[in-house]
Length: 444
Figure 1 (cartoon, rainbow, N blue to C red):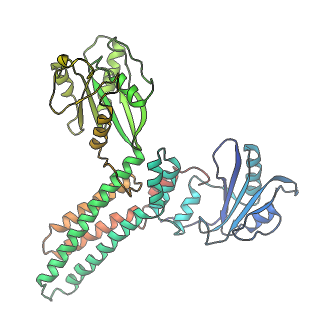
Figure 2 (tube, one colour):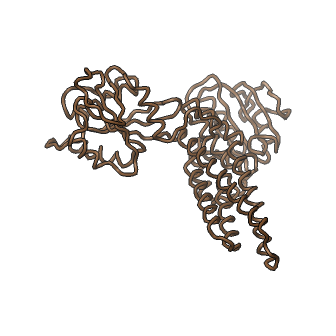
Figure 3 (cartoon, rainbow, N blue to C red):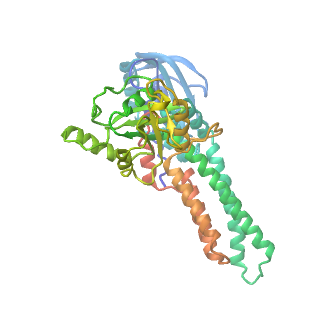
């Protein structure tokens, strides 16, 4: 694994552009020369000092607050200096360049957080949650990222690892003392512990899937024949006119995308071209893109005309849907007189024009993508976390099927623990660390 490199690093920690306050962060094993060069004297630990930030000749570059955090009681575990001055880009660059001239180098993206991880201030799941907290675009997503940052996700993983270690100790004892007869109590205890781990793994996986949904959202594709109201439904879900609506078939010729939220869950709604045979080359290209989009969807809203019911054309369109993607049958124009409607069992009836049935549709969307109502304690999770939990669950399942073969059982339990340790970074390849932290902003 990568080891901490304690050479001084510096970066602007606030967002680009102008602001009332700009923060420059410095971290390293010995940053006293930088403090003396910028401030002109020592700083008291963990106390804000109002002072000038000076250039090489002693002339002030800016006035602001300086804070010094001695190691290991800092964000990175190293000595840390924070200079909080005015947020003008030119001023911040002058102060940053002064720090660089005094021996610091410009920090790489995510390097401050990487050092915090390598110095055991946080684990890998917590480190990732920092980026998720910054990037969260819903209140629920931000709260979930904070739960992960506080260590709630890591506590669950460590608890599961502890149970696996206890069970491995029991199994290893069976291997070390094969001459001892295994009593029924030993086998019952082993099987009971294994079942308990399997149940807790399943619970953790379900919660992690919720967290992944909060972080990444779901892709919901609106598909159907021309003129059934797909663009009108997109506009209604978005709450604004994002798609052109006319009575002319084939108006939508490309995939339109709109980000929305339902109960804090981010969704990417995609309005596609009406699916039909056409001689128009541009429309045909749009239809091809629509069919391609269907295969990348998490959910398909199959929009149909309530006055026509399920038609042969609808049946033909549905035949192109991927079998592994859930479909909600939605019938539009439910505001028409009842005598003109053709009821279809199990379908949702809405009016994209008036909004009738929209709340029921939103609930159906959340249920279909796997979101559970009134979810509490959801922590932010990523695809790699979900995949690691799935691997651990599979190894535990394998362990349950090996019978009395203690060697195979011990190996499956070891692999399950290894999969869990990847989540918190106790065992993580260096190339994965590089991929994770390269996505952070500079200064974090």
